[in-house]
Structures are given as C-alpha cells and as structure tokens.
Image 1 (cartoon, rainbow, N blue to C red):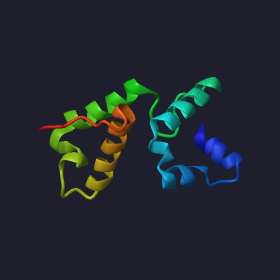
Image 2 (image 1 turned 90 degrees about the horizontal axis):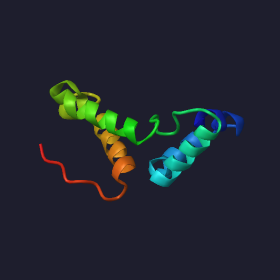
Image 3 (image 1 turned 90 degrees about the vertical axis):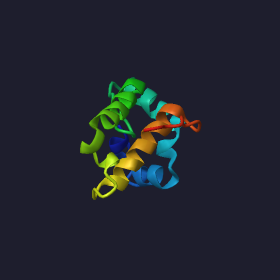
Length: 102
C-alpha cells in the first residue's frame, strides 16, 4: 500500500515516514491499516497486518533465544534486531513500554 502510494506520488513518502518516525506512530499505523483494508490489502507501513501479527513477531524473537540477533550483542544484525523489537513494542504498547526482565 505505502509503496504504491510512494510510487504514485513520485517517491519520497517512505523516506518521509522513516525520517519523521511517523511510521512508528500508532495513529499513523492505524490509518494506513484502515486505508489498506479499504482497498483490500493487509500489510502496510510496518510490515505487520495488525495487533496479532505484532505480537507474533515479538513472540518469535522472544522464543528464538540465542539464535536471534536480538539476543546476541556481537551479531552483525543486533542493532537492527533491537530497533525492530523497539518498533514492535512501540506499536503494541505506544509510549508506555512494559518493563522487561530476562
């Protein structure tokens, strides 16, 4: 959906959403989700279909334990994995992130 909008608008939408972090705002995600459903597409800006998909991705990372870059500070993709988890948690919980103990 967003890629199509970006292409039809001449580019720049995706970069704008990333630069402004608007793509992380739950209100923007809800809007693009609504817009995508209105035209029959499920996955939107975040690459997730909805709250269940967000939780499924969080669970997949949490259950992977040491096999996921999120759990290995020396892995070359650790920073990206941490950023992904933070983004997923912001989408799920908004500004009130839960305390995590491991």
